[in-house]
Length: 187
Image (cartoon, rainbow, N blue to C red):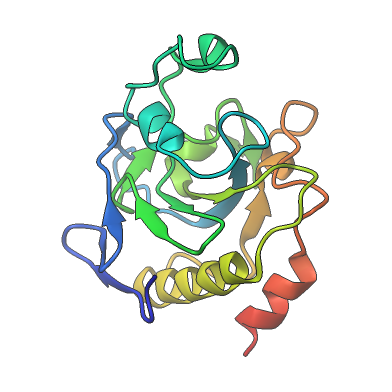
């Protein structure tokens, strides 16, 4: 677990975080910077925590024979910039200046293709479970360092996946406490 976050501006990687490089990334469009943060939830298999399955999904190594649900998703080419586990461990998959493939068909601030101008942050969880206090604390620390490092971001420009893909996505779900996150960000 990290006491402090630091970002190497040149590489776009968090210092002291766990790194697992996802091939599911590419360059942002020319002159496009991240302006919004998108909060997601993920658990593999659904409702189960721990293990290497999220890493394997984001690196295209998920074995479809391990669990029936994996047969439905193993061929997806998806990623996020960062995952925060239930214990607060932070794993980065994609440098912040590059485009992670987390939003899918999406629309925000009058624009489509939200991957172009967002940073995707996954929380290990489900739409209906409550998140751990440590996850909120690490999320707030991460948001604060991102906002301080990248001036195109702001604490007021944070949305859920459900906000940019309504009717298609519901995460981070009813278990996510937006008021608590705002409280932590204001400290």
